[in-house]
Image (tube, rainbow, N blue to C red; front, side):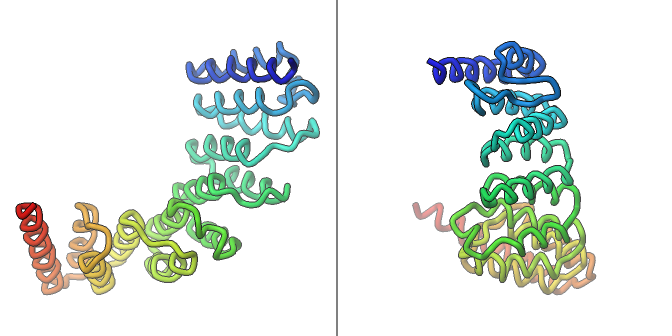
Length: 265
């Protein structure tokens, strides 16, 4: 009966969250006795299901500050938030550009012995990328064993590459692309390549940009407009007009070959 009541309350709060009625969600949580003053979650019949639903409601409403209070309140109540709770809160602060809090949540998750989940890790790296904190992104990745991200998506590492691009750190961007990803048994996708290419373009590294482009054309992910523009921009900034012409010829040749294959089908 208790479990049923908790599930019903969580469903009610989720519905309020979808309507962005986060304040009503908190009121309903308090009325049910699952939330005490100061954001603390009540121990007893409503462990984490209902407070987690309220946390999601705050995230949808972009009230990252209230989401943090709920996490802290649950901890003060003696409850142990799981990786999903930390991930929901991390998503809220990441969307608000609050990278210090995202990093704090990542550390809090690890301090509870839960390990760095994919969601929290990727969200934290994305927050650091938005905050242009490339050095912190590299430090976070360095703390993760190579096998930790092996079965996960490329989102986190790609975010770190993008952070390096924003910081004009093309050497580190290429290192992540060419060394870190293979060490983690991950194949770079087009987003990772484009971020590295953009880093080279920012720093007028035409030769490096051309090298990446040729690798894509010889069997990597199919280049898009971002890829082409980054490669041409790198050549233009470096005033390497011959390389620019070579890039254009390679792109034209590839386009013709792909069009021929499509027509044959």
